[in-house]
Image 1 (cartoon, one colour):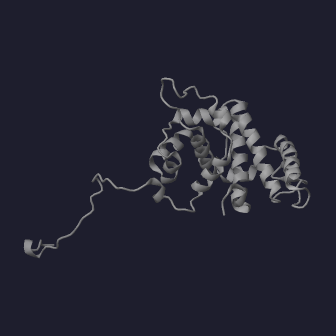
Image 2 (cartoon, rainbow, N blue to C red):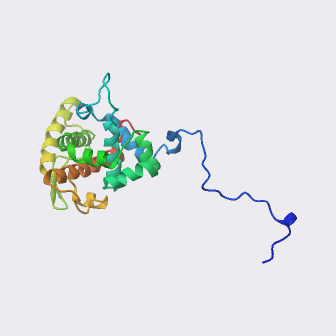
Image 3 (cartoon, rainbow, N blue to C red):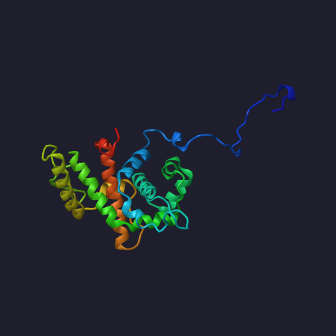
Length: 234
């Protein structure tokens, strides 16, 4: 096709994807208000992170680099588990490339080693958190106390809404949830549907930690769907 004379050629603005741009926009403005990452962070804000921060060696008034907020690490792994991402390397990469993970980080530095260590080092704390999440579901009347069988695993769920006054009921729910956690740590089918096809870690303690993450994510998913007001949403 012959090239038209210069005076007849159209003037066009063509794409230039290598151009570096500075945009005055807050990261928070880029993430939709109803994005699941916000719900994961809302849940993370309700969690007592104090025991994890007590382990941090960097303290005010002493030399050294500040540590990354453990609440951010918790929120990242909770959201990643909900999102079906189970690799620390992939989470670290998503924190640099994916808006939701970048929003959760909020500028807090994370890397593969920090994420990998955090995921498996706090099994007992996760165990207690799982108990609390189940108590929340029970307190909201979402689950029942009868033992049922789901995918080969015995699970216990929650009391009726009128069983107790709120304080007494929640205490009873906590006791029942402690028994539940001891009975089954993961709802098998749900975990498989969200990326847990096999355990890619070594050692029983690490396997238990991964199972606890998936069990907690399962409960948080139910809280967000069935009783979001329990964590200040909806």
